Length: 396
Ligand code: SAH
Image 1: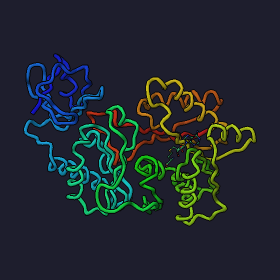
Image 2 (image 1 turned 90 degrees about the vertical axis):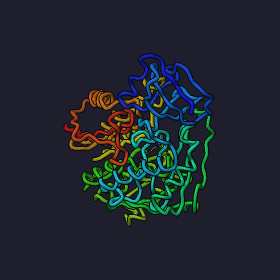
Image 3 (image 1 turned 30 degrees about the vertical axis):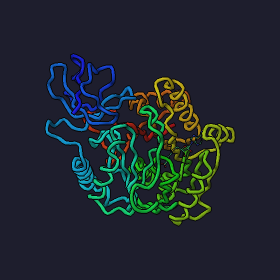
Image 4 (image 1 turned 135 degrees about the horizontal axis):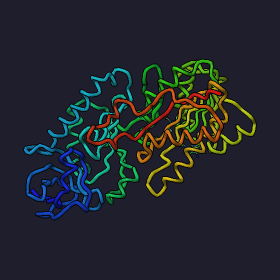
């Protein structure tokens, strides 16, 4: 077994059970480990620290699989981790409430580089590290020990794989190809999910709790659902008796699916409209026309994807919120979200405050929102908290 010996003092993060080591912390490598293989990670004193997966092509050189001296990273290891992930979700009533949920949230579930979403009897796997990549078949075997899946599908078509010099990869890993429209449910809502071509693994399971909040507060409101994708928040609003719902997205295929989702939930066609447009322009157009909405959902894609784009992304969040405040009457509600991990909750609240100030609007944060319990955050790895949301009421 190859060994990686850290530079003096660089074991600190591992002692706090944070699962990453950057290449600059590595003192020397003993043996000739191949990319993605499991190595013993030692302090400069030679003391054992952890077993980790080596990523030779990445700045993020080591991701820890286990801090246990006698751990073996094999099929049984993955089976046990997945079993624990499943138990956690069951204890939190997730599979009981929804048929679309995250079974494995990478570092947060002790499996760095591995994300697994469940849609009924299909598991969708996303591998983002060299370490995860070399264990693909053991992971599939481990998944099959957990449940007799109808199909296991890989959606490793994510840009982060380029940091590991891994090509994008998709396809069936086991069983059947998922259908183009798989019907799933969460609470009282039903959705079609396209596992093969949809965003991420097909659906934004992480917004389940916030969709429920929107559903609770939509009665008799005129709802504008911006960056709607397949209409998740819009369906929630309509089922919560919104007077009407407008979904806006730049993607026509996403809105076609949104239309199908409204039909699936038996929402009368006169109660909703799907508009293919740029949300920023749409907001300005509405302001020009002096339109008002009683509830606005703002759930843009990741606008800050690197430190380099921090200012630009924050300006875009602020602009969208500022324009939204202009369209809200007193008592109107804004549900605003950021899935950019680099934008902290504090920063996001500050952006909202700046937007409210520029809109000369007296605004109150009435609830803090975020990713559901199937996207947990390990106490040792706070970076896992990427999704944050604010429910804000315009008071004047
Ligand atoms: N709220 C959705 C997820 C939104 S994902 C849900 O809960 O399911 C972000 C969406 O924003 C994508 O569907 C993408 O097509 C859309 N999008 C990105 N930039 C846009 C823009 N400038 N104007 C309109 N839509 C945009």
